[in-house]
Image 1 (cartoon, helix red, strand yellow):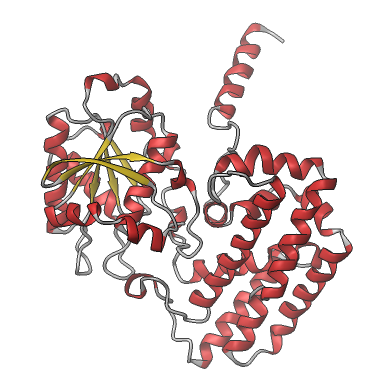
Image 2: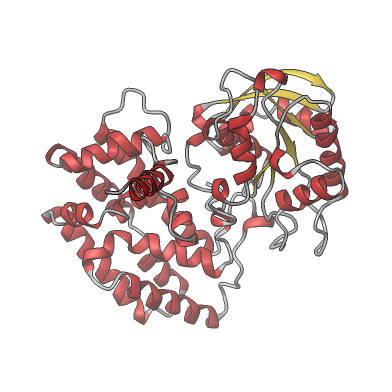
Length: 413
């Protein structure tokens, strides 16, 4: 190998391996993979290892379950009502329990499966921080959550069940119209192109859920990904060069205020909070600003709140782009903090330093009392609060629980 070729090879190897460490995989290939990975991480790992999946599905018990699952889906070509389609699209509760048990039990005989769980799934903390759980226990818990989360999407985005926040997240269609049943049959036929035989039937409900999210224009979880390599690249690179000892805080999270009317890119409240953030930045309270907010208000808005606030900070307030990170996915205050906690934990920020969050006084009042809401909606608290340094700013630190997937919020899990 010549010197030049060797240098190119090593450089390429370094680039390819830059973000691949224990518990991580390369970035997904496209938006559909991002939606799957974020919502159903354990199933995503199996999807990306077809040899392992075929091995696991070859057992007599799993094979019998998948045959039953596949036949039910194929027979839905005769469906004439909504309940028939829902029955075909979803896992049955008995199937969920048996499938999770049968697959996780194969860890004892599959070193490859055991290694995947121990070196990738468990370190990801996507199903909670592993405590006293064995690899089998953690995998079973993950699969139970995945299968149930897939069913949740079918119930909401095919069946019209009310989501947690109906005003912003509801289905796009009238489920009582006969024409809607033809659309569901089109979904069925499309999924059969991806899952043509019983060999792939483990992913039948997952692909149905993903297709339902797509036709409802709800691939929000994938928007602007990969953030670290695209929209957040300049700031991510700047993090590595920053002397954090020169600042009292590591970053400033700015909470948004969604517009109330269509066609309005940024609300008055969003402008004012962005101005607060700019002042704090120029006062050198923190070297980075995180703007957090997806396509949320009003229902089916075309605007991503974090992007519009970033434009305002750069074009109006003069904040340099390399000082701004965005989270274009959060839909609630709980996930504003959770997603920023994920940024703090993965972008190289100092773990022993507080970050701060700013908003209106009433909003920060709510953040101070948000523990019960986090537990109710997320199942955990992804941050710990410090002191309130003004009416509109409070300290916080990231907790590793923040990596845990929220199974009933498929637009921002």
